[in-house]
Image (tube, rainbow, N blue to C red; front, side, top):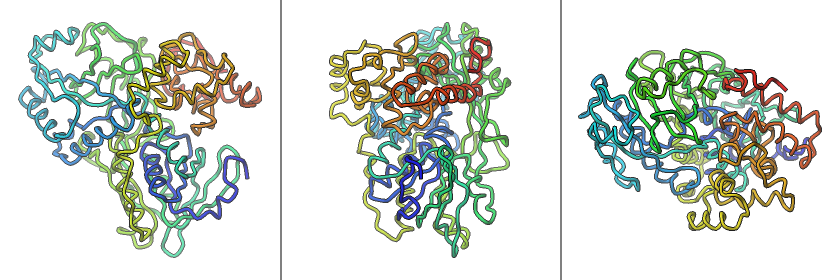
Length: 556
């Protein structure tokens, strides 16, 4: 048995096994562990290495869902947005949005106004400002780069943004572990074992240390996102298809002429009327998303050139001075939404709500198994609450009260976050840019990250060429990721802990330096360091980064 897997794991009396460590799985693990259940969380990759990493990074009420009369989903989303603003103030922040209305828009000024009124009504307890309508002149004053021809006016409202959605999931997983959960990444589920009509155990392979293990629990929750059906096929009999995910792709570009300053643009594509976003993000702009049915390889999802051209063209249409070209795209990313399977109909009409699916209610051969269908970043906490309530019901035990709506995530655990922020900037000894970086990523735990440096000053300075939020990783972050935040590979650190892998050069300017820190301070061999850099660069090729497209960097 290797050191990362508990010695007694095969005989430990788990109450619950969770398959999938995206935002929903991590959220379920945190809630269940906080309520006293003995939890095992498994994922064949890293925490948040699937759909969670591929969203538009918004904590929003789902204004568009009003078109499909999903009023409960909008209200739920707005309510959850308020909770996340409070429990994760370092990660979730208010962001103003502007919806321009043109004479060609499918949604005219009156319809947009009605939508705004409904949005405000469904969020009566919100802390953010209410909407306001802007005249043509007012919106051009705020966003002078907008195409003026045909512009009728705009709506302005507030929603939330989580720039680093990966960290939201990581902090849930870390909190779950701190409350007693066992979290194992790179643990691929081979089989759901059914005995006497119940799923009673799960067999998994340790993809890092080798070896197979069988763990037992009376309830298993399959929350593998787009891979839900793949997990279900690991039983001895087939299940009907449950997931019919759609593909969404995004572009990341440098600031460009005419881009909105400090606001997100929620525009309607001229080509097909589909809403999309131009969002200030991570010092740059995030543009997306598409919505296409997908039947390809779930482990290798890449933005197509057609999708890239579509997003470039639509951005140039609404902001003519942008003059975006393929060469200006820093990188792309693409993922699959784990939506319910619906073989027909418009992709945008498939519900973004979630279903906690108890298999026993549909097939008497399968008890002890729950699958999660759908769900979105904004509502992960409520989905987790519902799921853990269902788990307690299946265990025949009374569910204790859920506390995740009031209990801050690890980085949000400061009595007065503004005061904590000011004190850290004064006492950290770091340059302003680095202090801000640590606060935005780690919140109240920024001092713990810095403590990993000890007396070694080299661990307190940026590994890259600058100290900006998106490129300024310091050596102490690498040690903290491996020692405290469940990282197992270099890519985990760069892409989902320090977030430099989502910076303008996708981490290709700091990967070797980060590996050298691991050699010096974590005992890595040079052979492992070289291999991890190679694997990281192979992985980020799917983002089509400009550095690799132009041949500025080659495989290590």
